[in-house]
Image (cartoon, rainbow, N blue to C red; front, side, top):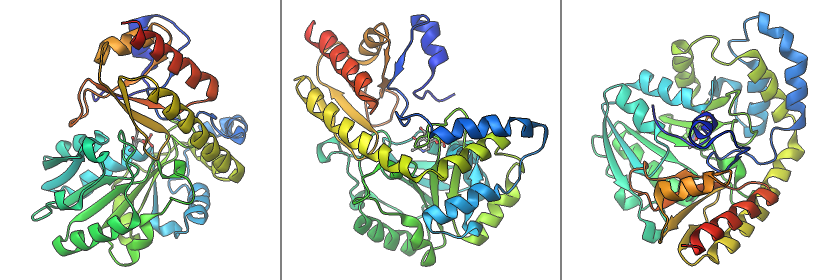
Length: 355
Ligand SMILES: Cc1ncc(COP(=O)(O)O)c(C=O)c1O
């Protein structure tokens, strides 16, 4: 099993039954839109029926929100299910993955026997993608994540267009994970799926679990050409998204005010964290564009010792030691509500300036 953030059971086992503030998973600090809880209550009796295998209600709302046809959408039990479905459907022989990134791309590729070429984003360039690093000759599939987890780095549309030329030239299938795009300020946001018109070997991942704070319910989506979506649909579990996740998704997508409130909260709190963390001399903060920050710790205690010291204060962070291309000296924190952020900063100050 891969290690990810957000494992509260493991934290309780290790540190005791504390009331943890969890900075280790990148979930919207506002919690789900209010309508989500009502929708679950209202639909609880539906668990005696099978769910709609097509999830038309959610697809219609998503189609309107994203500006794509419902035939271009496939729903998943989280975006991750679709990473595995895609790998299973395409069975690529060779893949290109830019590290550090979300580890499930490589896990899904390895599960189908794929050879993976890894290249490493450079911390000295703020982990920004350099197109010259992409060697796509004989490469069946390229995975990109925008904004990238865990670096928060962001690919511009201009860079994407150049990458599109490259994948077209080599016939490489391109997967772009936009699971954190909703958190990006509206004046910076752009969506890649409109390029499906010119290149149909493009598949975009979109998660609803982070932005709508429902990781325990699971709901994600993929956007591709209608033909490819039909192929994937023919290979998936027919009832992969349950009735309560569908009801929650419909309620969440119907709440437009929540999206704007979220982006404002993230922008304000991210600035607060960046400014306050910069005052701790041994920390180097990579600001990023999403609802999390990657931090390099140039001093001690580091790695698991820092994780333990914070956890004993009831604060969980994500040690990035298991991301290829990073080491124990990197950790990631989610941007949370103001009070939690203050507690994190003061916890870090106590630990890092007392040693
Ligand atoms: C980049 C990225 N994509 C997708 C996911 C998973 O999304 P979901 O919960 O919808 O499966 C994660 C989870 O951490 C992630 O970091």
